[in-house]
Image (cartoon, rainbow over all chains, first blue to last red; front, side, top):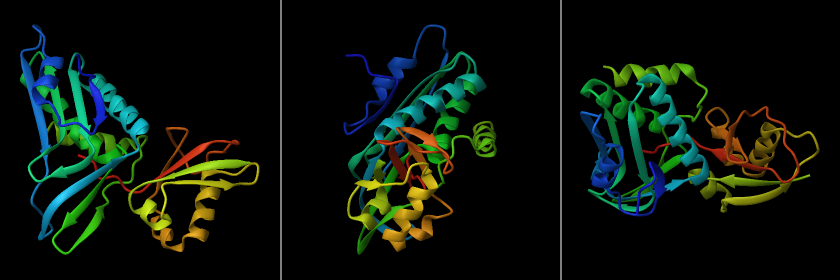
Length: 158
Length: 81
């Protein structure tokens, strides 16, 4: 079964599957990113996370991000899967694979995708820690905010 | 007209449900529906300046006009990744 390039899923993420999906003979560089559930945050001892998504819009947002990256780094091939539901410490919450002819574009596109995910994709992290729980709240999602997009490009190329 | 409201994360906790159905006068905008929610759940007021929204599964501005049967999602600040 072929994996879709973009997905929001309850299933365990498949780094190798995503890497295979973007690889081809003309792309000499594949950069990957794995976001992993950490055991602490703001001095709290995290026990696990619950991720929630507005799934149809999250998938569209991931598609949009990949299209943006394709305009910024023509020829780059991308795949990104975000996991939702209950995640234990050490489990992968997001996997990104970016393939390009050369390494600079692969690294940049991979970094760009994670920066944009944090800016606009409707996914929320419910953190459970020793003594309580809290919804983590990051960025106000505005896909039309060009300043935010350019900041993601800047970080990608830093 | 009647609209469907989808709430996520902390907003869902505040409302006690992620799916609401509410009546709205013809010509209502997303912002009007949001103001109605805040009146119903005052704790949501602190999201006035950080909320974003979607109509029928596409990002929408708060000024967007609504039609009968629309699904409006209110998105608190996101924290994926």
